[in-house]
Image (cartoon, rainbow, N blue to C red; front, side, top):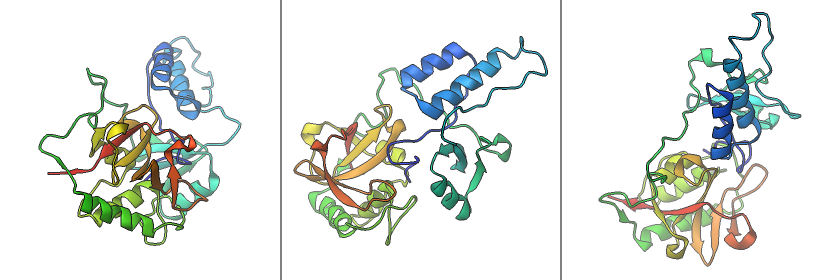
Length: 259
C-alpha cells in the first residue's frame, strides 16, 4: 500500500538527539514539512532539557496551518492532512490518534532511518544473486491484467477487484504472471533489480522515491513500452496510462526477476 496522504507525499516520525544533527539529517535526506518539524522539535526538546525549568511547556511537535491526523500502520506512526482518508482508516478498524500526535505507548516504534551503505546504493541497485528476468510472456500477462483494470478507482490499500492503490495493482498484476511480489511499494522496489532507463522494456517497474533508493519509494507503476506506464495514481483518480514525458520524472526503474 502506498504510505502517503497522496501518492507524492508521506512522512513518519523520526528521533534525534541534537538540533544540529537533526538539521543535517533534514538536509541530507531532503526532509520537509511535517517530518522536518517533528525531527527538529524532538531534538530541541532533548538538547534543552537540562537548561529548561521543570515547569516549562514543550513546544508542539508539528507546526502547520493544516492539521495532521496521525495513524498507526505496520507498527509505525504516520500523518496525513486529509481528514477523509484518516477517517476511512479509523472506520475500517485502523488505529488513529487524531491531531494529538503519535502515541508510542501503544507499542509502536518510530520508523527506522534507512541503513547506511558504504557505496551509497540501495539493495536494489545491483542484480540479485541467482536471479533471472521474467519472460516476455509473463510480463505480457501482468500488463494484460493491469490494462483490464483501466478506469477502476484508486482506493488506499486496494487489492481489487473493484479498486486498487499503486502497489496493490502491481502485486495483483504480477500474481497473474506467476510472481509473488511484496505488498508495500518500498518492498517491491527492494525485491526487484535496478536497471537503467535505456534498458526499459514492457513489464519493468517505474518508481518514485524521496531519496532515490528503495527505502524511500512511495509510488510505483508498470512500464508498457513507448515511454508510457500504467498506474493507480491517487485518491479521486482512476487507473490510467501516463507518459513519462508528461513531467513527473521517475526516480529509478527495476526489473522483476525470479530464481
